[in-house]
Amino acid sequence: MTTTRNQVLSDIQAATVRGQRPGYVSHSFATDRTPNAELSPAALVHMFAERVSEYKAWVGYSTTDGLSAAIAARLEMYGTRYVVPADFPADILQQIPCIRDEQLSHADIAATDGVVSLSALGIAQTGTIVLDAGVGQGRRALTLLPDYHLCVVYAASIVLTVPEAFARLRASIVERRAPLTFISGPSATSDIELNRVEGVHGPRRLEVIIVDAPGR
Image (cartoon, rainbow, N blue to C red; front, side, top):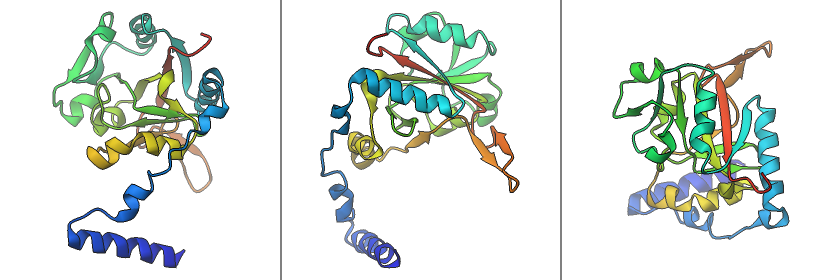
C-alpha cells in the first residue's frame, strides 16, 4: 500500500511540475464498462430505490408530466419556504413557490424549510446519488445547509456500479473539474458508543423522486 501511495504521489508531483495532469487520471476512465446490461432497466431502478430506502430515505415515483405535482405534494408536508438552484427548470416549478438561489447567504439558505434539486446520476449498488454542479443541482452549500433535501433522479441516469458512475462523470471531472457530492442517505454520524445522530453534516431528511421508472 505504501509503495502504491508513493507512486501516486510521485506521479502527481511530476505532472504538477510539467503543468500536466497525471497520466493515470485519463487511464482510470479508459475502460467502457456496461455492467448494468445484465439487469433490466426496471430491475436497476428497483435496486436503487431499495438501497436508498435502507438509508432511511423516502423514495417515490413520478412521470415527467406529473413531476411538478409530485414535488408540491411532498413539500406541503414540511413547510412553505423552499429554495432551488438558480437554474432549476422553470417548467417543473409550476405549482411550487420557491426561492431561487441568486447568491443567497449561507444564513438565508439554512433558514429555509428545505431544498429541491436535480441530480447527475444514481448508483444502484450503493444507493448513492451524485451531484456534479450541473443544471438544477446548485452549489454544495445549497444541498448541505437546509434540514430537508428533495432530490429528483431520472431513471435513465441510474447506473449499477461506482466505476460506471465515474465513467459517466468523466466530462464533469476532467473537462469541467466540477465538485462532486455523493449522497448516501440523510446526513448521519455515530459517537463512540455508536449512538446515531442525524443532520450533523447535512440534511436530516432526504427524499428522492425517481422519474419515468420503467413499469411505473
